Image (cartoon, rainbow, N blue to C red; front, side):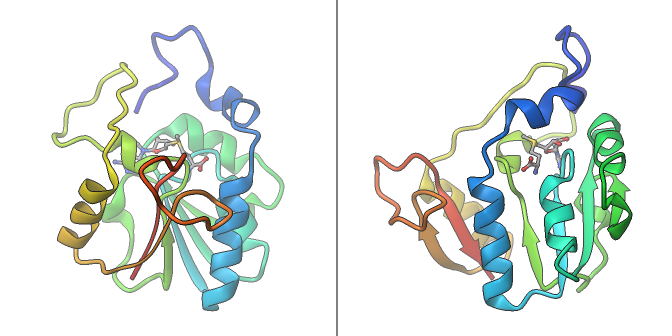
Length: 166
Ligand SMILES: C[S@@+](CC[C@H](N)C(=O)[O-])C[C@H]1O[C@@H](n2cnc3c(N)ncnc32)[C@H](O)[C@@H]1O
């Protein structure tokens, strides 16, 4: 999404330092263990921290991202060779290629309704009902709703909206 341009900041290189918290990565890794995931898809994998973590546990992992700079950083990390990195969007995911798929780090907020690309960083703050509606419209069933990575219940005051869908 071109976040490196126009901001005077190498966003991809700085991303990991700016997002040092790993609550969410540990949540996803625990969930993958719990459901016995063998083939994982990290859509919007960014700099690839989660994809590498999931792959390091003996899983097949695909990481997809449309930003070449983010993938460049991901590919340069230790263990990167264990992940199948793909530059693009969800259409690059093979049918039935994963039994566990994630959009971590608020990827859903950077999806836009049209195909227009912009250097402005626009985030969509959907409420829980709207998020549930959009994943159900995409054919998923919502199994669990959490309000944070510690699996606390989702309430109106929750810091996060975490949906586990099938
Ligand atoms: C905030 S970063 C999150 C990166 C990573 N998932 C994480 O947890 O650190 C959002 C990522 O979504 C990617 N992205 C933007 N539009 C996308 C799209 N249509 N499909 C997949 N990924 C997209 C961006 O390139 C960026 O790497």
